[in-house]
Amino acid sequence: MTHGLAAMLALVSAGPCLAAGLDLSVGIRGGYARWDGWGGYWFCVSAGPAMVSDRLNVGADLSLAQSKITKNGRSFVFWNLGGLAKVRYNVIQVGVGYGYAPAFTDEGGSGHAGVGSPFLTAGATLLHRFSRQLVFDVGVENVFFMNHLERGTRAPEPVPVLESLPELIVKGSPTGDNRPTSSTGSEVRVPNTTAPKPVVPPSFDLRCEVSDANGDRVFTGGERVGLTVSVTNSGLGAARGVAVRLLGTSKGLQYLGTSQSIGDIRPGEMREAKFEATLPNRIDSDNGNIIIRVTEANGFDALEEKELIVAMQPAKVTRETQVVSTLVDVDAPLEPSSFKRDDAYAVVVGISGYRSQALPKVTYARKDAEAIKDYLTSVCGFKEGNIKLLTDDGASLSDLTAYCEEWLARNVRKGSFVFVYFAGLGTPSPDKGEAYIVPYDGEPGFVSKLYPLSRLYSSLAALPTDQVVVALDACFSGAGGRSVMEQGKRPLVAVDLEKEAQKLGNVAVLAASAGNEISQDFDAKRHGLFTYYLLKGLRGEADSDKDGWVTLGELYNFAKPKVLDESQRLGYTQTLQLLPPGARATERVAKVR
Image 1 (spheres, one colour):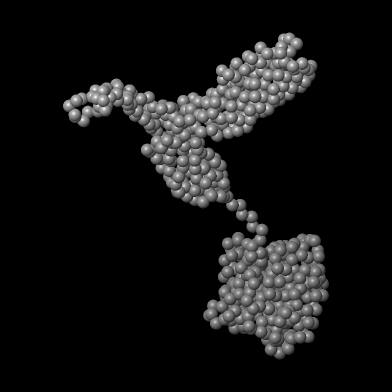
Image 2 (cartoon, one colour):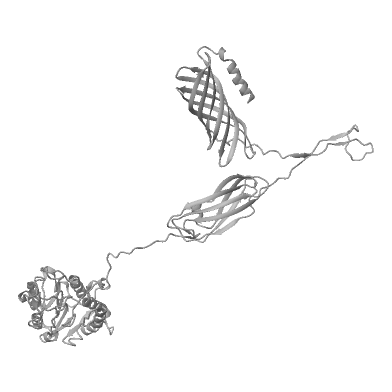
C-alpha cells in the first residue's frame, strides 16, 4: 500500500512532463461497493494519465480504496489496490479494472488470505482543471466486484498466546553423569519452550417457540405456521459457523425446511433461526416429532437437543349438498322375469297436463303410467306390443274409447288377462252421484267430454274373459288432489263406488281412495301415493308367503295400510279400496322370483 501511494505521488509530480495531448487526472470518489452478495461503503483515491476534452474523458488510473462490507451480521474491512480504465461523458463515468486485497479481517477477528477480483464502476463525476495538464475530479460511484469474496484460503486463526519459560542453561560436568554437556565440556544452552493457553469453547442455551395462525398449536392445512429457535452463547468462547438443524418424523419438515445458518455468535449474544411456511389445505394427519439440533463449525455442537411433538391435520372441508336428482327405489331398473303372458293386454293411461288451462296439473301421473308399463313387461309377463300407453294429448276421449273398448274387444279372447290403469283427474256428477274419468280434452260440467266410470266397467265386463284388473290412481270426490269439480258446485260429492262396482261383473278394481276421500301425490317419492306402493308391491314386497308370486289379494293387503299410514302422516286420509270386496284375491299378477 505504501508503494501504491508513492506511485500516485510520482504521477502527480510528473504531471508537467506528460506527452503532448495527455493530462494527469487525480480523483477522489466514494460510493457503494457490492462483492458476492456483501455490500457497504467504498472510498478511493486515484491518479493516472487521461485525455480530457470539454465533454469526453478517457484515461487509466492507479487506485487505492478502502471498503467495509457486511452480510448476515458479519463484516469485512479491507484495502484494495488496483488499476482502472475509465470513460467519462459529461458527468457520467464508467470504468473497468482489477483490484487486489492483500488481506482482510472480519469483526470477529478472523483473518482471511488475499483475494483479487475484476470490478466495474459506474457513477457521476465532476471535473476541474488546475493547470494545462493537471485535472482533478470528484465522483460518486457504485463498484461491483466480480469474484467470490471468500475464494481465497482462509488465513489460520491467530496462534494462541504462548507462555514463555525461562531459558535453561546447563554447564558441562566432569563427573561423567548424564547431564547435557558439549563435547568440549562447555555449557549447553537449551532453547526456550512455550505452553499454549487452553481453548475456551462456546456453550449454547436453546429456546423454541411454535406459532400458528389460529393459536391452537396444531398445524392445520391452509394456515401460516412457524418454529422459532433462539440460540444464546452462554460460554466464554466465540462460536463459529453456527447452524440450526431440524430432524425427526414430522411431515411438517417438508414445508418448514430442515436447516438454517445463523453465523458466528459472540459470548453472551443471542441469534434466532425462523422456520416458516404456509401449509397446503390437503395434508396428512400426523403426530410426528421435530428434533432441534445446533451445530458449530469447529465441532463445539450444543450438548442439548430439543424434541417437539406437533400435531398436524388437514383443513376442515365443509360440504354443501344440493339435490339435483335422486333415484327413487321403485324407479331402479328391474331384472326381467322369466314369466311370460303372451295372451295379456293392457291399456295404461297417465295425464299430467290437460288441454284446458283451468284444470290443475297432475304432476306425476305421466311418470306413474310409464313406470306401470315397465313393470308390466318386466315382472307381469306382458309383451311390449300388447300394451297401449296413452299419455297427455294422446289420451283424449276418443283415444280412451278406441283402446278401452274397441282395441281390447278386438284382441281379448277367453282366458286372456286384461289390465287397465288410469292416473289423472276424476270428477263426480253432483246430480247423478256418478264418477267420471277426465280425458285430456275433457272439462267438468260437460258430461259429453267425460268418460263415465260405469261405461269403462261395462265394456270390460263384456270381454270374453274373467281375468280383468283395473287400477285407478284418481279420486272422484271433487275435493282436490286427483279430483276436480265443476265450477260453482259444492266441493265434496260422496260417490258410491260400491254401487258402481255392481256393474263390474268379473272385473276387479283397485281404487286409490274411498268415494268421499282424495288421492294425492307423494312428493317425496315423485309418484302418486297409491301408485308408489303398488309398484313396491309388484317389485316383490307384497309376496307375503314368499312363493315368488304376487297375487291381487297380497297386493291389496300390502298397499292398503301403507297408503293409509302415509296419508295420515301427511295430514289427510286415503283408504285403498278393492272392489268388489275380496274379488279375485288369488289372481296372480306378477312373478318376482
